[in-house]
Image (cartoon, rainbow, N blue to C red; front, top):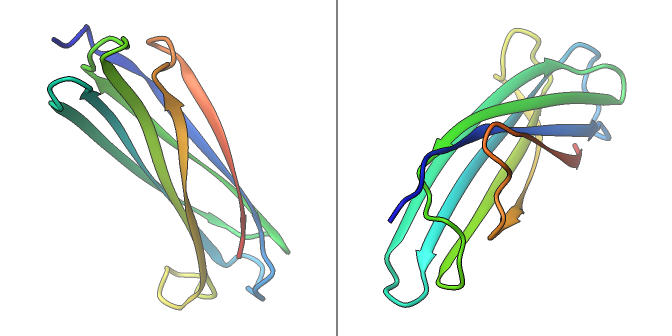
Length: 135
C-alpha cells in the first residue's frame, strides 16, 4: 500500500575542475537522473520512479559550477522492515569547446551515487547533494 505522495526537490550541484583545455565561455552540460525504488522483501513487488534534469552553463577559466534542481512527487510505501526504499542517482558532466551548443564534445565524466536508503527526506524538503567532477 502506498502512502500520501512524498514531494520535494533534489538539488545536485556539480563543482567542476577543468583540466581539459576549453576556451573561457565554453559550454558545460550537467545531467542528473534519479531513481526512487521500493521493493517488498517478502513478495518482491516493486515500484520505481525516475526523474531527470539538465543544465548548461558557461565555463570560467579552470572551473564551472552548475546546479540541477529536480522536483519530485512519489507515492512510495512507508519505510518498514519489509519495505526497502532507496534513491539512487547518476550524473554526467560534458565539456564542449563550441560556444553555440554542445557540438564539439571534448571531455565527459560521470558516476553513480546513493542518496538515501530507507529514510527519505520530509515532504516539502529541498535536499542538496554535491558532485565533484574533473573534466
